[in-house]
Length: 317
Figure 1 (spheres, rainbow, N blue to C red):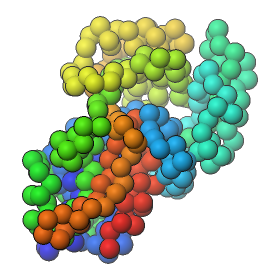
Figure 2 (figure 1 turned 90 degrees about the vertical axis):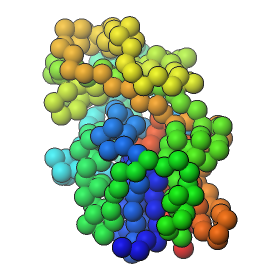
Figure 3 (figure 1 turned 120 degrees about the vertical axis):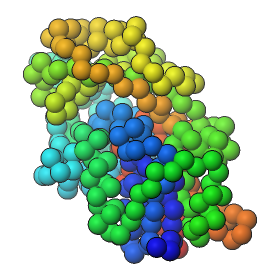
Figure 4 (figure 1 turned 180 degrees about the vertical axis):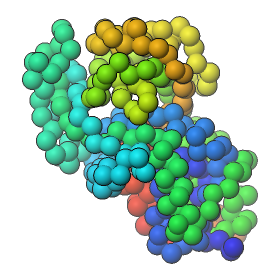
């Protein structure tokens, strides 16, 4: 088919953007260097919660719009991968959260009995927890239902796509450092451990003041996801055994049963943090084509995916 738009990048941001464009009548193809289950998005813990993302004045609207989409999908969790799950962020207060907090129904201060031993404050909320492999597969089916296609294709220059379509959308995440010649894009390495769930039905996040060694426990179907790390500038994609052991130990301080849980696997992803925040911007390229950027979502790609997708689509004629 002839194409109106090529979206480069097959993670949650690329697929959501492609869905919005296709459902508006554009002829869309997604180019992805990897199968969806091997993208950074697939590794994500899947909790809707703004993390390591700027600019603050736009994160709120993007997050709120995405929250609304997930709430509409949560009634079909086996199909969409989206569930609304209660949980706690330990150590903070409602007043310390950003403007996005106003969009979360029922957000409140945690009671003493809802906190792990040794902690005196926290925030309770019931928010989306997304099973990312299931959700990415659902996004692809929704795109195909709207007439779009996905092609596995490594891209060495965005000009390759511009030669085949009048509009190119750059959703390449960490790849934008090279493809968009943007040195402000830096990896923040996140490592996770997957274990058998000893019975947790709620998520729990214990942030680290330094930001590099938080602890979080996310109950996903068939597994409990333990995290995590935030190692800026670290490009390693393989799991480190010592780091994995430290993650389990941190999580077990809050939930002792985790120490005895059987390990199912390990995951590593590179969060695409961008100095200056998310870039959603259009530019003309040689030959008259249009290049639209949508990258730099940091640790909140899942949280802002639909808000950023719609903002990006508004730049496509």
